[in-house]
Amino acid sequence: MSRPIHFEILTENPEKVVPFYEAVLGWEATTWDGPQTYWLMTTGPDGTPGINGAVMGRHFDQAVINTVSVPSLDETLAQVKAHGGKLINGPNEVPGVGTHAYCADPDGIIFGVMQPKTGEE
Image (cartoon, rainbow, N blue to C red; front, side, top):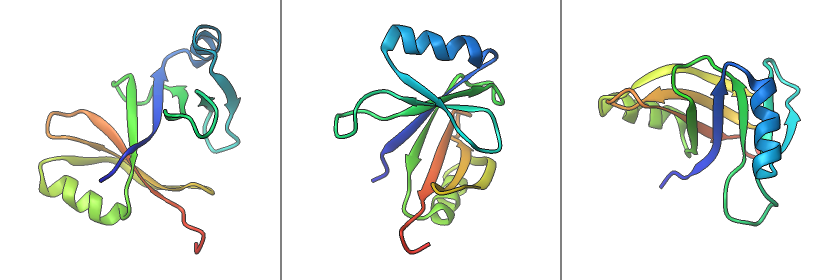
């Protein structure tokens, strides 16, 4: 069973939205040192229920995207296609994290799938 591990809030104005969530919900933002502007959002202490996420510029029409952890990205992408979904973007390597792809279900709802990097890689 695959579980949600991350969310992304897509917005036209991240510089305005990030301080909003910090002030209203107490989330902590840090910029990610990666190939795109991306604010990692810590929503609570480790070991408590919930997931962390991010705020980023809007590159899809959907405002929130949830990412689930999968044991095999290749197998999951094959299942997505076999059951009427489609690959939207990727797979892309996220340095130090794993391999990620965006998919859409048969109704067009976008979600992410991530094969986390293991210690052997």
